[in-house]
Image (cartoon, rainbow, N blue to C red):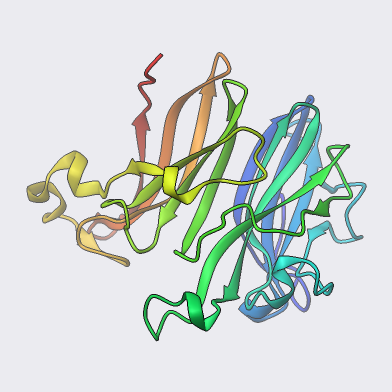
Amino acid sequence: MAVPHQGGTFCSPHNPSISFVDGTYVLLFIVNEGSLETQRILMYVSDGLEDDWRPAEGAEADGTILRKSTDPGIWDHEAMLGNSNPSLIKHHGTYMIYFKGIIPVPEACRKHPKHSRTWTYGVALSDTLEGPYTKHPERVTKTYDPIEDACVFSYDDRIWMFTRDMREVRGGGGLLWVSDDGMEFDFDDAVLGFHHLDHYIGKEETAKMTLYRLSEDGHLERPQILFRDEKPAFLYMASGLGYPAPYGSASHVFRIRRQE
């Protein structure tokens, strides 16, 4: 087992993401201390998938690489559920971990009285793969429309990002963002990144499936990219729809056709 549940201050390791960077396998995941409010991000590394995983050298002893900031000058110091859902890239020699925080929305920026908090993203930087990482003080997504499940990747000398679009402001389940340096993503320029599952397989097919969570149209989440020949080739996502027992909810893979 790569990362066992350890109880106490190391509960529920989940939402893993594995990258192969500089000849090293890097496993990022989140844990908590028995409640969601204490979520934090850990980094383990390994020389091979068959080897033992160890905490990154620049992390805390248990592998914690990012946790909620105590500095009021950092955007996530008011994060309600700590740090979560990391995505790692290397771009122009800098290592970048993108991470989610849930923060209060200023009253003047609320589109609805109930929209008192939002899901948003920041980035932490390092000159070395195993850290330590320093957080950029400002959010990289300068919007109060909620997003999550970011999958960030470097391609064509720019930084791209898939996210879940929690209010479906572009008419679908996900957004595709692009940035020249990865330090700021313009919400106005983000485009529809992916639809719900019924868009791809039809409502007749999704009607045959069992709803385990989320929505009957097959809301897709947790996008992850597989590269081939240094180009994005496949997009993997999960949904709350699946087939009856003994199966369950399912993940799906989509071929990416690039416009050259």
